[in-house]
Image 1 (cartoon, rainbow, N blue to C red):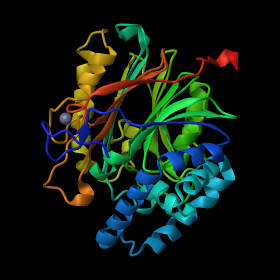
Image 2 (cartoon, helix red, strand yellow):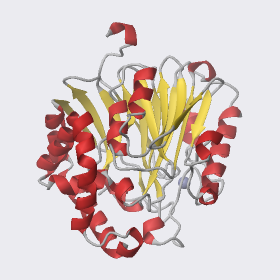
Image 3 (cartoon, rainbow, N blue to C red):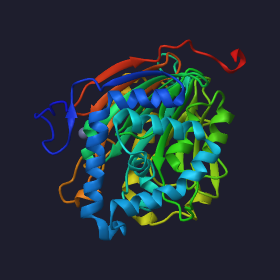
Image 4 (tube, rainbow, N blue to C red):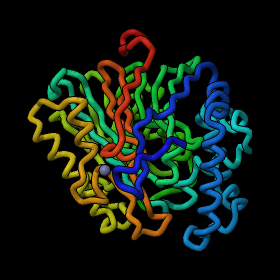
Length: 381
Ligand SMILES: [Zn+2]
């Protein structure tokens, strides 16, 4: 674990070290195996964290043993195996590489579904089209807010699959990667949303993993709307051409919100009136609304001069602290409810670079990574 810096917020993790990156290539199984070998230690640590949470929060989660959690997770597996076996293979590879039982890893990758979103989490995503950025690049920003305990298990995957586009994405603790971009200039950020129509189906992480293989904006949106999906995220999907969408998804419904004015943001509530009709506990999502409005206003204030540096600054914003865009731990919360920004990302889809700050970006330092693959556009397939 990197040494957390101490001159910032003493209860929130951050470090000036670069986040680790694993380079993998080959079949899906082989890529997963390489990830498992390289990140074996943190994957085991994460598993221990969640086993402990299941034990201490059994009543709230209404799951009374790890074995019961596995039984729940196994119900989702046939749907994933039927429609995207390559990503099941990827996960099997991670399990084998890390020396873990596949079922344990499956639980981690079905966590949102089997806990019925008891782990309420925030995230902030945004994108700006090239005509509104100082250097004419399409820029995407994302703060990944999750359990503070997962800070240490964050890493990047630089992947060259045999049969799909190369991608650069962030993940943590043995989850399939879903936040990043590929060599076709398609980027995805995922924000948790809370619909009331969840069902047994393809888990959200598998559905969103498939988006990273898309070659066109329509391919990406169709992947997010897999007909057997168990529930949904908001998928912020951006393309280097300047096309940007929020794809608000639930198990049975969706809404596309197009970024016509070139500036898009999303947090954890449904923006469209249509989807809000099926949102659970909307009154608990006021903090999400404040972050959303704040992010949009900060982008609009930049009057067409948005840059990587200005997005980095925006992601460190503390208005409405600790529930701010740069999200900090509140010790008043129960352990299961604590969250913080565990990684902040700025993607440049024009130049295929990714700036990553590990932990809350106000206290950490951005490091730049690059996707080492030739940029491809749709007509070069
Ligand atoms: Zn902060």
